[in-house]
Image 1 (spheres, rainbow, N blue to C red):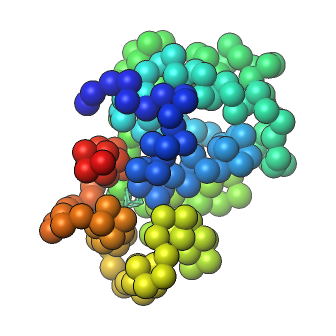
Image 2: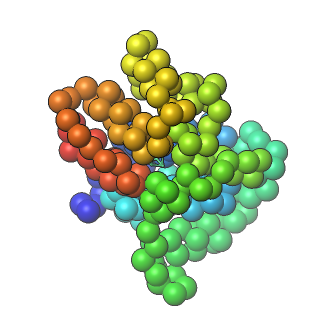
Length: 194
Ligand code: SF4
């Protein structure tokens, strides 16, 4: 994948091209300034694979984790007191510490299996969110009859199929067919259309 496309400065615009699962994590991070362990893990790897370089990743996470948090359970840490730990953790996900593994983001199936709970705010919106939460998230991108269309098919289809329908509606192009298997693949396909 090409590198450096997503930066700490342009991420609010780029996030509009993210699949709903990762767009949700971006919005949650901006809102609460913290994410739970797995959400942070998956989202950091997603950004890495989409081309955010290490320097920008450190700036992005530092900016948020330096702000006062607005939640109770997840947020015992902040950047000021845990800078070394957070920096190590991000470098680790970039394969620069520890076993220097090339960690990959999970595919859609893996994400759908992670059910959101009090300690995990991620998951696949098409699979794991209740109706109100799904509608609330999707209406940031589509509305009217398009939103109704997605809400009607979501309970009946596989999440990846609904995600593909959403992609086609949102991109408003004549993409006749697309199969979604991974959040990174969704983003790169959407970015190529813009
Ligand atoms: Fe994300 Fe995959 Fe769910 Fe789409 S189908 S929202 S890419 S996990």
